[in-house]
Amino acid sequence: MRGIAKRFPGVIALDDVSLDVGKGEVVALCGENGAGKSTLMKILGGVYQPDGGEILVDGQPVKINNVTDAMKLGIAFIHQELNVLDNLDVAANVFLGREPLLGPFKLINSKKIHADTEPYLKRLGLNISSRTRLDKLSLAQQQMVEIAKALSLNARIIIMDEPTSSLTLTETERLLELVRELSESGVTVIYISHRLGEIEHCADRVVVLRDGKNAGQLNHDEIAHDRIVSLMVGREIKSFYVESNAAQTPGYLQVRNARSNRYPEKMVSFDAARGEILGFAGLVGAGRSEIAKAVVGLDARGGGEVSLGGQKLAINSARDAIAQGIYLVPEDRRGEGLVTGMTVRENVTLPSLARFTSLFMIRRDRERTTADEQIKSLNIKTPGCETAVVNLSGGNQQKVVLGKWLSMSPKVMILDEPTRGIDVGAKAEIYRIMRALAENGAVILMISSDMEEVLHVSDRVAVMHEGQITGVLDRADCTEENIMQLAVGKKIASAKPAFAN
Image (tube, rainbow, N blue to C red; front, side):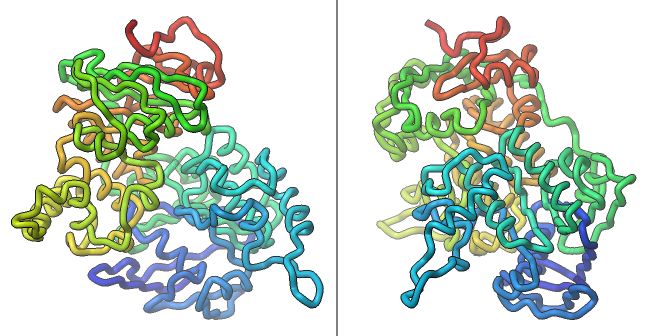
């Protein structure tokens, strides 16, 4: 890729960017959110067309007008935001648009599709049937289905945009092994990730973008965490954990007998202190997200009893939770946290429109003031509050979700995978926001599959296994070994009960 340029309304996404990749090479593409990584790859994958520059494959100029053109050139793209159809089964998603047909009526050969899909699932260590509908799978499993689809294309170049953002440690290890296998078989992998440990493990070379321009590159023997960060952000990133100076009020939030729709026969009870960050760890499928949704009324049958400051709350819907100052930042920010066709202003003020009305009319000047305050406070990279959220990077979209709730002074903030797909600089900002909220008296519940995040950010960690909390670890006892023991259902002496009797 030579001199690639791309502009969106009010934004220069790419400015004279170049990228070379060799056959069988694993090239990590790094940069902060908004640096242009995904945009550059969407041009290579045929999603966008460049405003300038050229693309050469095997030394020959090519024109990639759409995704089909890219696929014909052997380019497969695993997107950060999943492109799956959850009303279809696994095999139908893997071979979507490439279905083998039978007879004069050109009926889909369903038997062949399922037979051809199974080897890819086994190669990924994905223990599910090819006949399983996507809406029955976790986000992590859906992401593995996307990877299976890319493998089925027999691609020469596979672009992986945050491929491990929803995967467990075991799944991540298998994926990194697969990347190496692909490389050894001559397939080029362009690997976008904010998990720098993975990049150190698998990359032959690192290319860094900053503000839509080339910032530099590192050869294999130069790859190191600090050097990547230096090129990405141009500043030092301090330790994630900030010890709280706030006075904590134990048992301020009490949840009793909550049930998740995944494990309806099991009840979950826990306490959280005012002023603390309580992390929730566990393997994917342990039921953490489902309990969060039950607490905020998204599963009215499973919420159990919720008390705040000694007062029992009636939460039968999300509206009830919002009225009590209990907010959820969901794992799927695009599908559940935002209306992407709306502007930053509209998204930030959507849950609290009554605050911005006068004589039954929405006062846009008031909306703009609040949205601009959140843009400034959260350092959201956007031309302005009237920019459509769909035009922002993933990390900045996440900040818009945060801004929506921060503008409403939360009492309890539940964050489900708050930094999925977010760069190291933006992560540090979000952790500071979480700590500031806690010090201002909020209860922070953080669900995360990122072990480093759980260990570095939480004051205490509650660990779940198959729909139940197996124990809570004080900060002094928070180690990867202790968390994993509890996550697989084992009891350990240092674990405390989840709630006071």
